[in-house]
Image (cartoon, rainbow, N blue to C red; front, side, top):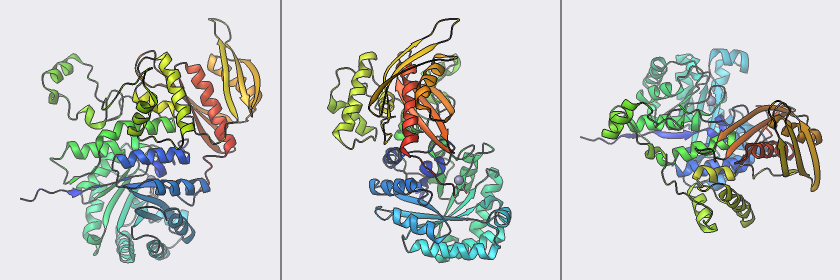
Length: 511
Ligand code: KIV
Ligand code: ZN
């Protein structure tokens, strides 16, 4: 009996659809760091961005294409010439590239958004695929809002784009409206009714508006789909996309059910989840499947007793298989440069030059003086906030006075454009006082959209990572700071966000 299973292609879109999540935009360097981790995890396709969206997006796709060697690198493009040429240009240096072109096919999108007749949409789709094939032999076509499209029209357009050279056909549940039984059956019917369906791989791409993105994706797999589009931590527009870790672990854990297997090295899942969380400032909820802090924590006595007697009584997966506690080499005050650098390499973090590493190593030493054991999570937090391309603002000193029953006061010394300034302010709390003091001189006119603090490791000696999201003129940036003193981390995060605003990074053009 032949037991060989089909390969399930894992297409990660954290850097494209994930980044479309408000406030989750990433710099080029941040994208490269995440892409390296995805490559290590053996993700098959990395969608690095939407090359035409902005010069920043173009450069990020180009940089990921130049860096990644083992995964295929993809750029999104609307079904129009300039988008496709720009995607092709950005992917020129990739080892293996893909252009992912799309157009909406549902009656509501064609009528109101595109204001195009279905025949014109079909014609545009075919032209787009033909043009994309001039840049790469790997072209994916998506029927945007596919789950609400007319079946007969879908069959026609899919047959036509396969004939034009599309090798992957993606039918997204763009608005998160699908239900598993219905969405799976749709794929079954499409595959049965499109005469040349055997010439393409069918793909699913689900949004989580009804909390069904993973269920819908898995139902699609049960009905013939062989590519899943997903994101780390389920990051993505609105309620997010299907989460990569849940899809991969469901398929792996239920090998008795699924007719497919992935090539993913699951031991990199947790470190990658942490990296994405620290870069975007989107914390992972403790009860999130696979990557939440409590995902493998058994609290009740009955469960603990059962697990101790025989692990499988309550555990369906092993924590170390997804990277919990795996390789968690502890470093400390006596660890030297080589050990620290080697651990960073293992975490997928490379330093462009010795000056960059030196800055991080100094932070490591300062932290090791305050905290005995340095974990992977600490190392990751030390490299956040080092990458604003322009550093106009730097924290030199901070003193905060806080007394029960009276208003806290913050006094700071800031280096602004190389000149030292003293500032102070009162606030409703110590963080408020710190931010007010900074604003008394920065006068940024930015709105604070998010302030969040998370403990990096367990224990009261943990570092706190702080994310500050600022908005100015419709532009959102995330600043990040990390320190065992959360007021210092807060000030650093605020200054990091101001540096980002002034550097013009993360600029996005609406498309
Ligand atoms: O959700 C969606 O329809 C998309 C497409 C561009 C694939 O993200
Ligand atoms: Zn999407």
